[in-house]
Length: 498
Ligand SMILES: [Zn+2]
Image 1 (cartoon, helix red, strand yellow):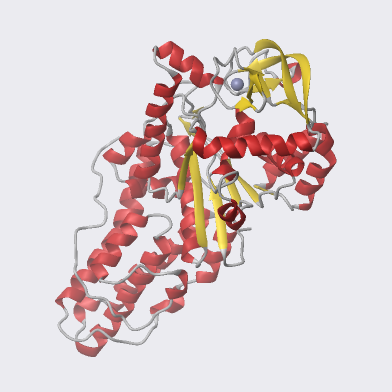
Image 2 (image 1 turned 180 degrees about the vertical axis):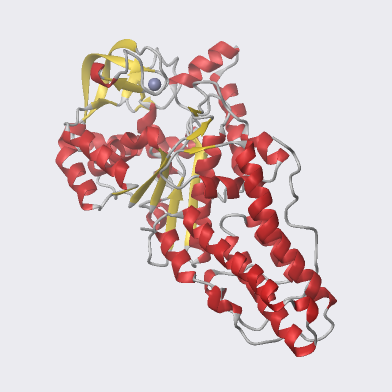
C-alpha cells in the first residue's frame, strides 16, 4: 500500500554497481521508481528520490585492473554512464550519490559504524568461507547450485580472513516479527514469504569488513583500523541515509528519514529486508516502511545481466524509439514483482496499437476539430462520467502500475468512443461546442493521468492544449481555459517489420 497520508514521500532506487554498462533491467527499475515518485507529486506529496552509484566494491577494483586504469577512473566514467541513463529516462531524482565520494558519503558511514559498535554489535573474528565476488557475498555449500553461485554461475573463492562481524543473529526474532506483522512491508507477498523462510532458518552474523590489502585500499576504511575496509554492502545501503544528510545535515535527515519505499530487484532482497533493518535497529534508527521488489527482464526467456554478457543497451533503444515509448512498454508489459520479456516486436505492437492508435490519434483529432471551430468552446460535462478515478488510485496504491495505466487507457478509449458516437465533424454551433468542450477537458485530464508514466508526452499535450501542468485533484471537468495550438503527432507509427 502506498503511503496514504499526504506529506513527505521518500523513495529510492537500488544503488547499482557500476562495474559495467547499465542494462534494461536498470531502466525497468528507474521507470518503476520514477512512476511512483511522480504519482506522489501528483497527489500533492513532497517527494525526494535517491539514486546513485555503488562504487566501493571489489569488483570495481578487479575491473579497473583488467582495463589497465585506476579504480577512480573506472568509477568516474561508469558512474557518468549510469547518471546518463537516469537523465535520459527522465528519472526525477533529487540526489545521485556516489559512494566513493568521501565528503558526501563517508561521514555518515562512519557514524553508522560507530552506532552499531556502541550497541556491541560489531566484533572481530577469524573465519573461512565461500565468497562470490560477483555478489560480494558469502555462500554456504547448500546455497550453491552444482558448486556454483546461483546468480553468476561461477565458482566462489575460498576466502580466509580476520574481519569485523555484525551480530545479525541477535536481531532474528525482531526482524521476523517486523516482516510478519507487515510493519516492514515487503511487496509482493511471494518475496515476503521467501524472506521469512530465510529468516526462520536462523540468521548468522555476517562479516562487515574486508582486508584492506585484498581491496588495494579501495573503499571506506574502518574507523581506527586501517587494515580493514568496510564491507561494500554496509556502506552501500547507507547511501539511502547519507543522500538525505545522515552524518552531515541532521535537519535534512530528520525531515526525510525513514524511507517510505525502497525499490529493488529480486536478487538483493536479503540485504534490504534482513541486513539493512538489523543494522538500523542496532544503530537505534528508524526502519524503512516498505520494500518493493521487481522481477528480472528476460530476452528470449534468458536472464539479462552484465555478468552473463547478453545485454540490450537501453540508451540505444531510447534513440531508436522514444523515451516515453520505452517507459510505456516497461510499465505495461511487466507487472511489478513479475519477470517480463522484452522484444522489439512487442514494443512496436504497443507503440502502434496503443500510443499511436489510441492516444496520439485522439489528441490530434480533437485539436484539429477544435482549431477549426471559430466560436467559444463551452458545454456541460458528460464524458467525465466515463472516468473511474478511484479505480486508478486504488491500483496505484497497490503498486499495480500496469493496471493503473490501463485504467487511464480505458478513459482514452472511452473518449475515442465518444468521438465516434457524436461525430463532431457533422455538428455545428452549440452542439459542436459542447462536444469539443468535453473532448478538450478529457484530453486535459488524460494528460494528468498519464503524466507519471509518459511525462514528456503529457508536457506535449499540455502545450498543445495551452494548459498548465495539473495535479490529481484537477482531474475533474471544469471550464476549459486552454489556448489551443495544435502541434505534431505525439507518436510516430513504426513501419519496421521485425
Ligand atoms: Zn554471485
